Image (tube, rainbow, N blue to C red; front, side, top):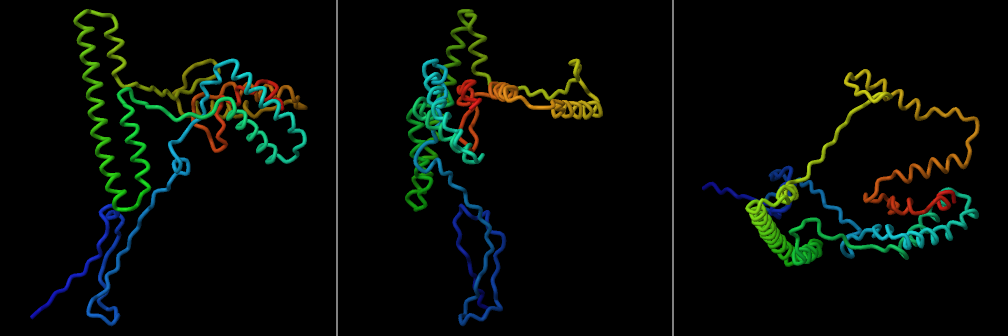
Length: 278
């Protein structure tokens, strides 16, 4: 009588795509009538972001800097702290002192805010469910993972329902505008359409003529770089450098994500001429 035994390695469904190879070692002498089974698994664990461990990620409330009084208060606080930079010699220490001064002034004047919803049909109930789901994601227990899956499915249903209701209401409003020949009809339709972003990458010469030939484009880039780094000045005036730095700072794009220093462009633009010179 022929007896065939089969051995298995049980793995969670979540990590099944990580199994690269699985085989039984019949030549292994382990003192048992069973053959060991080896599996090669390659799993890449997700990195948990540090800013999500204590709550939703918050951002600087730079909108408050549009108020002249708050902007003036921020400028006075930073300028008062930057007066002591003359005692610092090392560049790294100087930058850390400037960074801490800006952040402390921003904390006292602007503060931080939790980002709000980005979709018009998003409700507070859905946002609360998302926050609850985020907290359950780090729970590796079976109960926590089961609750996470349930919340994920519930959020998907709520999002679809809210989106459908929002679309139906807008369609009903469009029908009413069309029936009454209201001129706001086209504006309402435009609001429902997805926004189109056009990115034109065109190279022009000094006279504003569009260049099509690849060789002309390369020559234009070479000419631009040569003019950019062509410095024929015998000595550099400190006031001229400060003016150039101030011009570059004022041209920085607003409402963008901060870098590793956590300082947005709005803070640098609110320092004023005195703060930039310091």
